[in-house]
Length: 117
Image (cartoon, rainbow, N blue to C red; front, side, top):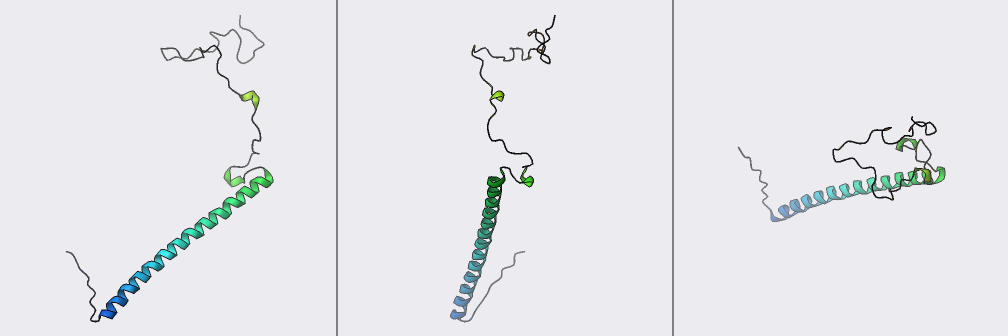
């Protein structure tokens, strides 16, 4: 069962005043919501600026952001990976199996100075 609520006024001026009050209340809610969003943006900006300043001064992130270890300042050339110049690469065979260690290479991967016999 539906219930219809009607507001009846006997005066035209009272109807206009009631409509203006409803629009004003809606406008207040809108302004309040926008102020909350602006406040949240300001807090986020201040927090981000503080983290950035801390990172600039100390060279690391705060602990609660995972900054327990010092940040890496440069790349390690020993960790670079280069493409195989022959173009063959070490791709899996058509059967989908990878070559086992020690079968194709006579050098022990654990101790390169010891060769297999």
